[in-house]
Amino acid sequence: MNRFTRYDVTPETIFNQRRKIIKAVGLGAAALGLPNIGLTAEKSDQRKALNFKDAPKSDLLLTPENKVTGYNNFYEFGVDKASPAKFAKDFKTDPWSLEIAGEVENPFVLNHTQLFNTFPLEERIYRFRCVEAWSMVIPWIGFELARLVEMAKPTGKAKFVIFHTLHDPEQMPGQKNKFFGGGIDYPYVEALTLEEAMNPLTLLSVGLYGKMLPPQNGAPIRLVVPWKYGFKSIKSIVKITFSETRPRTTWEKLAPHEYGFYANVNPNVDHPRWSQASERVIGSGGLLAVKRQDTLMFNGYEKEVAHLYKGLDLKVNF
Ligand SMILES: Nc1nc2c(c(=O)[nH]1)N[C@H]1C(S)=C(S)[C@@H](COP(=O)(O)O)O[C@H]1N2
Ligand SMILES: [Mo]
Image (cartoon, rainbow, N blue to C red; front, side, top):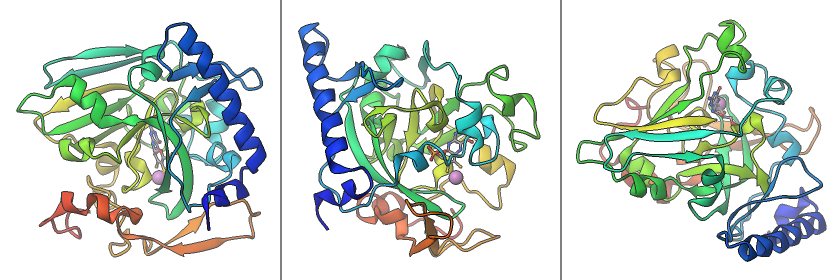
């Protein structure tokens, strides 16, 4: 396997061409005195292309883009995997406002443009493992959450970083109708320990496959924590608060015996109703081409994150 394995699914020429376009437009941004990161217009697509630093070479085979944007969990737009793409189509993500508050010395707010231009954007090709035992490989674009945390300057009291999804029942049918929204008590809330938030793998993502996030993937900004089950990667974030105390997060509240706070991918700790030892790989094949693979400890990121949980019983703290 080599660098070009990834183009088995995004044909090499198309992916490279698109990158050339992105880079060319990037020069225009520099001429305007803007940093050479962030938003640029790509005429052929409604979503804007982004400038970013390429990911290092990866042996991971990318999940086809149409699966990444067509097979989603975003219960605010319905519980069915096809619903978010359908019902979030007209979701308004610009203007947007992301507020940073709580136990910090420097609270601030980022508007839509600032989400893309405040921190240097880079591409990260990550494994993504849903608690329902399916997985993808996604070329995210974003910045390290650590950069934002540094800017906020947490006080000595801050121990947890809490993320809040937009609450807007007029736009989100799942928030208007409890049944449609899977019985979740909205707004969706997630949290990380400050240490987890500072880990270099933890991203705030604003794009995938070279472009801004589509609404169904959590536009304009969502969390990506690749060693944890997908439900930790909260979408369409409007607020990040720093706190001394651990909040009760959305899935923990809904079913505490099934979904823990840590939610680290762990093939040795089963969900009460199914095994977590293996996963269905969402790929380019048809419905009958079901590929399964073994699930890796911490989703394959053990080297980078195992130290965060030293001395913690992962069977109890699942
Ligand atoms: N606000 C919000 N964030 C969410 C969810 C959700 O329902 N609402 N679903 C989570 C789950 S269970 C998964 S697996 C991932 C799916 O992300 P994707 O659709 O981009 O693959 O989003 C997570 N973030
Ligand atoms: Mo999930």
